[in-house]
Length: 278
Length: 255
Image 1 (cartoon, chains in turn yellow, purple):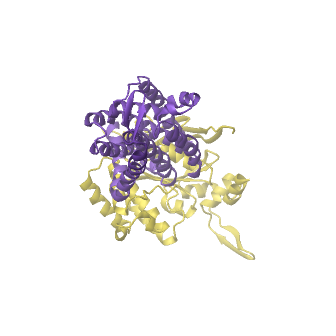
Image 2: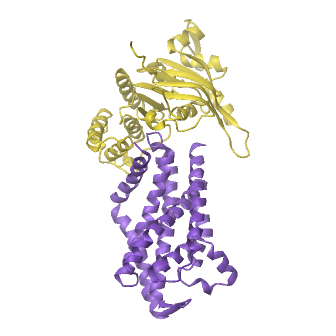
Image 3: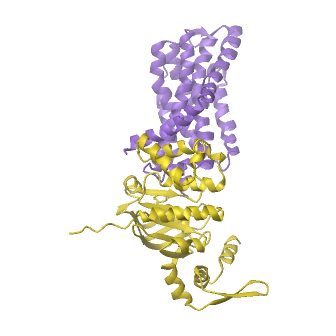
């Protein structure tokens, strides 16, 4: 009998409510369920405050959920965090690089948190820094790196333990187009080896390029979930869309993922974010 | 990876940073107590000569040197826990980075406290070594004092962690520093016997952790009278603050 491999990530009925003194409870995530299979890239799309980062932090076990369950390769991340995180790589939205160390030492140091032996850690660090185009910066302190390099280093560090699930929270925010494409190439390469990716992003193009499936999140709920092509087809059809790109300049173009987002949420991302900030 | 190994791994991360900046680390560890020793021990000590504490007569230098053990524990553990902890938690986000590996946030916080306590012990050990070398402290007294010093370092580290967890900015750490830590340092008997204070102030000071530490340390190092209540007072503060600090930092991190 063939044993069925558990999914890389299962999130079931996840709910997260924040309680703060003097404020009404805030439901950041409200009954989200999703599954990421081995080798799949699953994208979370939504404006700031939609609940993407909270889902990510619950998925890594950093936040305890108010309700629901998160499993990484069949292991409950909140009950058995040590075992579950052995196969988890995380690149959070915040820069969490260790500024006390050089680029190389930082990688080796990070490996120690997974119990990886030093010789193996050094070998793996060289390999990753080479692949991420950072080997020339090995002896530099993190502070000496550009924003794009820091971001690449953070993703490289997340791959230190050869994870089978990689959680990337807005990994390309602030990167120039070239750096973004380099990172995309690396992620595609890693996926080919069976790595599952949970990716949150603001960039529709990124989601269309990288993700097998995307979930559009709004106010802590999944509004739609499917492959980008299927979402576009089912929500927008195949007809060309006419759009005024500049005053007096009208073009016709095929529909894309942002159109789906606008249709489902009823407002452009910029408007939603403006509403939230008011 | 067991919990103990995880905690030790966090400790090793901090030690690696300390080792990298070993010159800075050693200067801040050794120079400060040396300066105090020369200023108060040899300088002021030669003016004052011998003092009487209860039935004991001893040199002011020996008295103040034992006080400096407490000061080293207080300042090193608290400042590393508060300022160092705030930097690691808020600016470097190291707690966050480690807590998504097989090392849990709880273990990160134990490792943090253990490290700050280790710094406190190292600092105090420096003063103990000086006291032993100049003949003011007995060797066995220094050895026996170390576990107590470790316990109290752990407690002051947790005070630092609580302050870091409760501070919105690094500047706001100054409030507890000036309103609690410095007064404790000045009025708990580091530089003069508590009997010199007004009665009401003695009552307050007697309950403070630094007073209790100095009482135990002076008993072990200088043969002062044993004040049994010092240990329960230290345990009380320890049991109160360690869980409180960990819980506050946890809340800060995950909310």
